[in-house]
Length: 231
Image: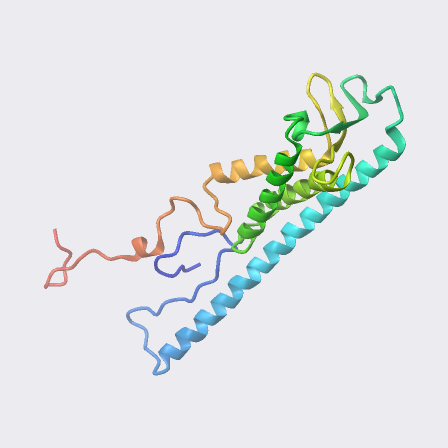
């Protein structure tokens, strides 16, 4: 891949760019028009990559959301009246329905409205990032975050005791840990993936943080009058 001057080093699905003409190549009389056509083609290719990544993000988000919503509807209908937890893996993992007015894992029970606003803000931020999304791993991570945020936000908007104050349905209990749901799991998995991508320096737009630019790589040493590099 040949990057345009000034662009960051990118991954395989980075924005397509037009190739530059070598010093010894013959210049076409229609070079300006050809460059404009190449630029338009590169821009169209970049938009196509973004659309594909947004499609992946939305598919992951919808799957995470529907899985969470379906599991909550099922456990509320079948398990909420059970007084004793249902064993899944001995006493280590059980199923029991708990209405949670706080954040993930029962944190901040008195801040339900605040967490509703935070979930809404997370969704807005994810959508803004998606407009320049070229990285497939970032699309997966943001899809998990978006689906999980929507899952718990649905509870806060539509479950009792009231709109914006609804309690989230938690039902997976792990011994010596907490009671949570599949939306919480999606958020945690997406968050871990975001941390790993950030640690590796991979940005949502596909660029590698701190990588040398094509302009810096291609800039020749200053030559003297005799054509030899200056000391």
